Image 1 (cartoon, rainbow, N blue to C red):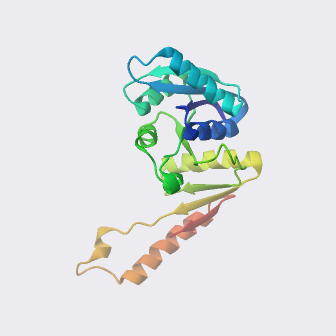
Image 2 (cartoon, rainbow, N blue to C red):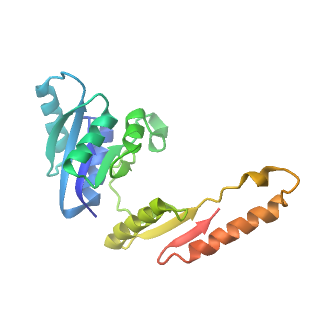
Length: 210
């Protein structure tokens, strides 16, 4: 679980979704910080009223911050560095039916180059805060994917959740043509089998390759 969690909020439902997810992912003794990122000379009393409303809507214990920055993504990154956050949580995009899958500009900016782990709350999570029973991990043997898998295992251990890892096999350029290109079907099947064998070696994980 995470001990120092920063949440980007803006008074809208997706911010409350982020707070609900952050509250579930933080450790019992963890710290929760809600940050409103404002540009320029926004009136402080408006910011304070919005922050109080955000916290009241979720009924959580949290520190409230007003962050001034040119963009929400930059402001959240800078605040995460200042407080040494180990997790940054933001809400998903609010584009109607596709809100669960699409990332708006602010959310995408929070993901790029973040100084810590980033979680994106599904749209509507605050209203339906279901327990997390299944963790999916993109895995390709890189140090970054190994870290992601380690975090997933740690979180899953607290709730006896399942961990599933997926490796997506990428074809090298020679597979797309040329005199020396091997038969595509045989070549692809061989690569997937090798990846599948690697995934089976991961302990306590349901691994597969495609």
